[in-house]
Length: 251
Image 1 (cartoon, rainbow, N blue to C red):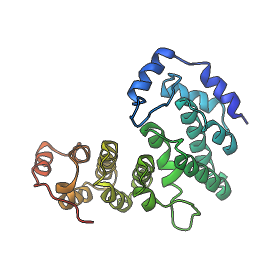
Image 2 (cartoon, one colour):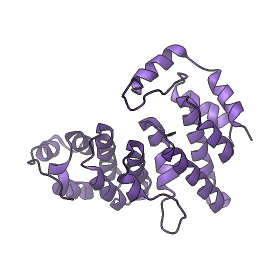
Image 3 (cartoon, rainbow, N blue to C red):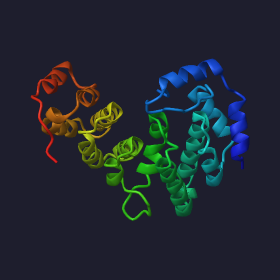
């Protein structure tokens, strides 16, 4: 087993200052922006994944140490390690309820502490570490519906991205329920996430179910969400839904 210190050193050894400066701008780390103060090593994601794989397994406690780092790539690597741990504990031959619960709770704690604080970190981790664990009868200190109405942006995005795990299993209900809760969100990042999950319902579950949802809610959807949701529809269908008169979603 590796340690947080060993993994952090391996990542830091590959630092690219020029790429790090670009990443800082891309993830909006300036004053008042959503990623204010975040720091970067400048590693491409495939390299971060490769280094992380070479240091697995990483104990949950060591991942939690790495999640306290100010460096984005350290926290991304910690989340990748937690995903790998959760997936291993979810396989039939290596199923371990205790490991699944510990990994899930470590993740929820990191989200609440603000350690999972940009869309890349959320999108990499939420479907597995939140969505795959939020199931009836599975212990959890969190709740997808509570996260969807949280005042914290990244908790809300975790709730939306968690729906992807149900979508992959062929179920659209959680996505429709959670997306409807965030349609009035003021953040463009939430509009993009909501539209993305709706698009995935149409691709992976049922286009007819997506169209039924759009028939009911297209008029209340932010334009960005509607654009994402209809991306794979025909030009005629996209034009039809864009032309629906604007309405206000009732509470």
